[in-house]
Image (cartoon, rainbow, N blue to C red):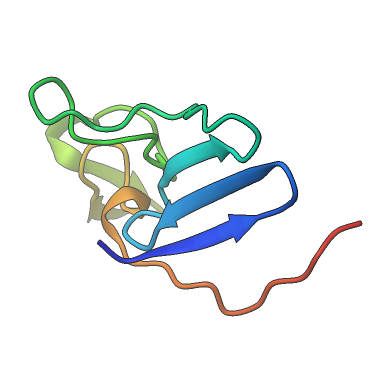
Length: 91
């Protein structure tokens, strides 16, 4: 799985490219994991980004300015690939 790693002196955070989903937040001090580890026997996602909607649209479609558009449950962000293009440190 492709992911980005962000870390500081206290935490290591792993963010999946698919859906920009946080897959791990782990303490450097004691190794505590704070994110569900996606046991496929129960639920295979960690913490998906639901954008631009949360939920399901009737017929998986919506209308805007007289046009009809398709949108799957919870929007499109959780199933798209994201890449970091720029980052900086905040002090």
